[in-house]
Image 1 (tube, rainbow, N blue to C red):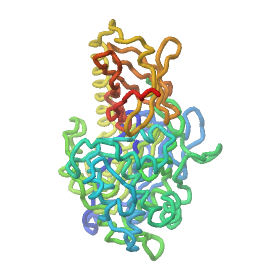
Image 2: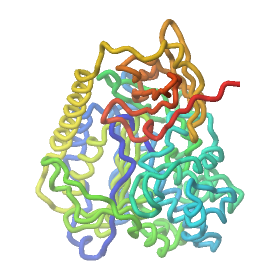
Image 3: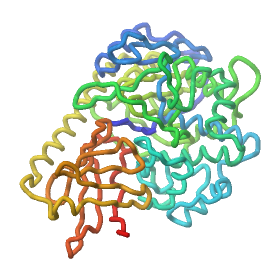
Image 4: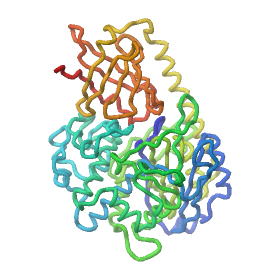
Length: 525
């Protein structure tokens, strides 16, 4: 997923090209300074543990762990240590669907409602026209991360209940006109698997991907982690300090981001991908070469912005989203890849088909600069490019982002009318509010103040601190959750008409989609 608290971007970049020429030109061995470079990246970005896999010319040349599984404890990360891979799960979901297409049970262009009876979007036209392909390509018209609060942080809603709630989500743009990354429709796509096969997405991934590939350590849920398991613990910066945080259970959004895997297993996944669906160690295929080409073909054009000066060399000439993969170019090669983020973990998978090269970086902290600096160091080595200090470049970008965010929040603090008072007595703001898609949100009085709870999200309990006028700040007791402003609009008679929310920090993860909520007071019975 989703899914990282500061700056997780659940998208990625991708590619594909010719194989023969590049294979003869690039080395097989990894960078000689790889261990030192990883150590430097971990130190710079304050990442406790990391795992790296490199596949070159069909061989696993690196599958290795670095650092520790948990801050303050000595147990090391190894090649079998599990990390949350977040939205890198999406490629597994598309691969699973591809196997059903090979069997003639599905088509990418099947209307969704024919496979999921009762599937309804806000716009009746979209409900009728949306295909499985549309579910996978972030062009539905929904806003960025719209509806993610239905599963993030962990909620009591089921996958079926979340799919039902799609009908209440107003589009942000017209159908197929605009790229906006989403998670809910990938979860919906995964639910087509049980609708067609009678086997849950979870079991299908285990039986039809993990088992055939020998991914014996990977799983689709962290809900049953036991003491002593070889797992990395999630870490996040809270109040400026890196801390261990609870595992985020994402079972209700599984097809969008719940897989946990390790360097050894992800290397096997990369081998399969580079071999276009054919098993490396035996005859047979997981999916056909035709499906491989389709999953790596552009579907939705991505906007290309100008990176900061330190990263100017990374500006692509093209960028697209395919089916579970992102596409872009780098020094004349087409790249196929994705990033992933869940609470306390971020990861990167990158394929360079022209070089028959694949790279995986898994981390147990929310620092994308850590994995990208290592990725491009490895690519530069195999592309025979001059050395670039990617660690310094990504650190410069991070420092700039955090400085700008701090200045924005400081200006907002200075500009607010701190001496103003709410229009109503505090108890008048208390009550149950309903959002069309999220459902009930309760505000109550407590200790002469106000407390807000998202009724289907157990950890979302926060104190409402007066900000200015009829705007309060929701300061969540669980500090992994991004704070939010909540502003009340009054009717002429002084009663509350509605309340809207917005994230406080400019760096808030997009899955905290507070801006998509419209809270209306529940009718009193």
